[in-house]
Each structure stands twice: as C-alpha cells, then as structure tokens.
Length: 232
Image (cartoon, rainbow, N blue to C red; front, side):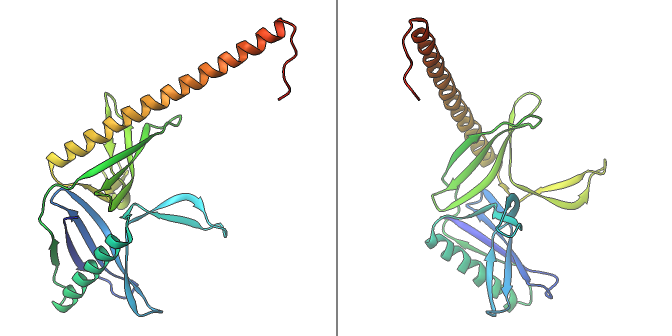
C-alpha cells in the first residue's frame, strides 16, 4: 500500500488528544481526522480512526461509536499506526512543525467496492457502499443518494460548528477523493455496483414472489380438487 502521512500537534495539549494525522493513498484519496490520543494510565500514545455515532447501544444503554474507516489486516494496522506515531514524535522533536512522510511510490491505489441497496420512505438514500483499498483498508458509510436527475455519491462526513447563509449546519467530508480522475473512477464504480446489486435484489424478490404465487395456486387447486392439504 502506497501512502503518505501528515501529522500536526493539537493546539490544546491539556486533554488526551495530542495530535491529528491525515492519510493519503497514492495521491488520490485522503482520510482526515485521525486522532493521536494519550493513554494516561499506561503513559503511552495510540491512534484512533475517525468514528461516527451509531444507532446501536451497549449493555448499559450507552451509545456505540464505530470507525468510519480502518485498516483491515493486523499487519497493515501495525505498520500504519507505528508510522503515524513515529511521524508524531518527529513533530514533537521539531517544536510542533508539521511533518509529512511518504511510504512507497505514489500512484493511484487499487480498490474494490461492495454496495447494499437501501431505501427508506422519506429518505433519498438508495444504497450504502464500502470501499476496500488493496484488501488492507476499508471505508464504510459511503452513501448513494437520489438527486433531482440522477444518482450521486456522498462520502462519510461530520457536522462542523459552522453554519451556511441559511443558518444550516455545514458538514465536512471525513475522507474523499483528491483528484478529479480518481473521483470519477471511484464514483462511477460505486454507482455501477449499486445498479448491479439493485438488479440482483429485484430478481430475487421477483423469484420469491413467483414461488409464493405458484405455492398458493397449488394449494387452491388441491382444495378445489377435494384433496386434504398436508399439515404444516
């Protein structure tokens, strides 16, 4: 996996958040809001990927937070987190100056996409996608939305403290394509996979409805013919 890391120190060092990292795959896809946190009990630092508030609750009724994106394999997780923490130590050694490091030759990353069609009354969401980068890193919560004329893709985002001219909250993408070329390639693949998954879902629903209709027709024929139906 080819990527670059940029790290900065947090302005307020009184809390447990000590720094932030930005990760870029190739020169094509950026992940922001990666936090570098301090575990005061163990007197050590650890990396926390950007998270979102889910609708699930734990056994005590507390909110469960899930990663927006994260390494898939233990090997890549260790490599990535170690490099982020190493970059942070370099920042501290240079009195808070921004530090950037590159691992491997920069080029457009390979990726694959899975999509689950999803529709809810009153919502313009048509599907949810996951993007896998070289089987090492996953991005969740990518939405396929129905626009006025066509479908479009929305990357995971978070609510900022800013508001627009109408007083509405401003949202910022957590991760997103950097280049126009990669954006077109990624978004086209997501929409294509959505259409494929939607067609399969419709075929399965049609087959299920057909089987149910045939079963009902058989039951009615057996009743009309005076035959006892088997117990079920």
